[in-house]
Length: 189
Image (tube, rainbow, N blue to C red; front, side):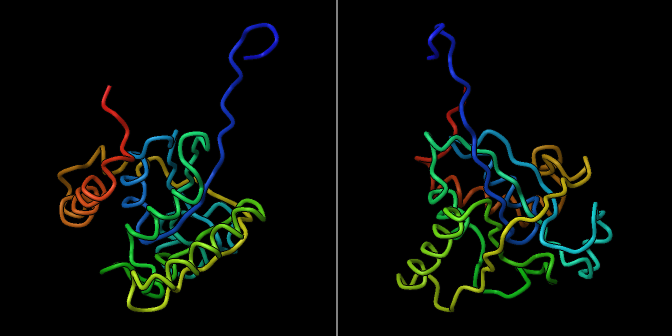
């Protein structure tokens, strides 16, 4: 509370992550307690304001990413990364399943030096744990610019649950999330 009795606004932080199709990551993170919003978009490329069609060519340098706004008093950046590293395959270079190309790479775009250190430490710990049989290929890079994706790519799974890609690719990931991270899920109101 402030001196005049008003509640102080929560200070949100952001995480920008790429791990295959942004529709999958968006569907995962919008279910996590402490996550306030998830925006699908593009980062890491050399073209300003790219379109989905441009990014899909694999020539813009962008990755499909989600930008997650979260309340660090409810979920830490490290916890966000732990979910990220278990909900996609960080050992496959420029691909996730049948999605192939540099736009589907595993990448953490950090917003500050603390996030960079946490990401690098988390990668080292995951590799040392032997959770994955192969080395992680996740890129850790500074966030230069984030471009929100077009409106039809936002809340895609929620709006298109019966679309074949949603049924066969995204729905199993959301089911796995609910099984593995039941304790981290938002409570139904």
